[in-house]
Image (cartoon, rainbow, N blue to C red):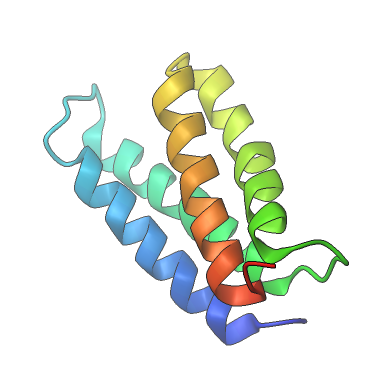
Length: 101
């Protein structure tokens, strides 16, 4: 595994940031929505940290950010916010953990 510790830390941070962004929103079952969002974003950070590909780090993050965000976007029909946050978060995590070049 390329960077397990970095993936764990970035997943925790990204999950906490997304939960913080969602706190003011209203949901039928807010607790479940927050837990699900945290787990999805934690997993995204973990996967990006653990993957090893011969691509630039930012591209690894962007690809996995998009790939792992699309299912949640399809289920919730909140396409733009979920995909954009996943893509930007993945891009940043990939760049930080794997480099920008």
